[in-house]
Amino acid sequence: MALAITAILLLVFFAGKVRQYVFLMINICFVWKMILGFQGFLSSIIFCLIGYGLIYGSLNNPRRTYTFFLPVYVLLFIYMRRYGFLDWVVPESLLTNVLSTIGLSFLLFKILHVMIEAGSGTLHKFDFLTFLNYCLNFTTFMMGPIQRYDDYYNQWHGEKKQLLIHLRLTLIL
Image: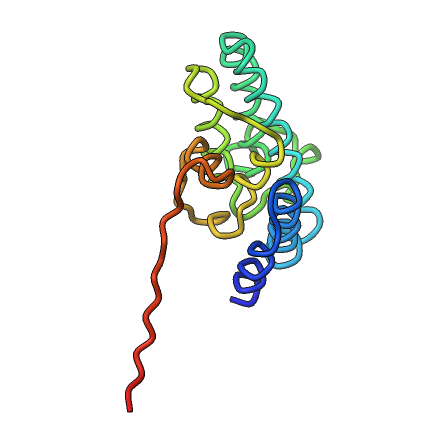
């Protein structure tokens, strides 16, 4: 709750790239300090960075990205989650629990969504900071909902109106 209030108060005072960096720091604070710890945070960031590379590849050469790099990325996800069947096919010395983090499945779905949009040509604008904030957004990190990247981008950059929430205070005397 305190993090959400802090985020609201800070984001009101900043605009443009500074606002993006402030929000990224809030997201990093949440994912690193409150949820995953350093190793989980680091593996999630690396997973996001590889996902960014896949999306960038989908923008330029979707066929090659989908046929080679996407299956490798899904295998990386399976390895990081350390599913039980891996004990049958991978030597114990190569398996680790360090990379398995909370929110990794949801992160995979977000990245795959943006990658598919990029490959189909329906992704309109794509930038690194917005992508990181989209992936690490503390309000949706663990359970969603999955918002379309274009909608997130447009709301964040003021190209689409955000939903307004009106608060009414009623005093009972």
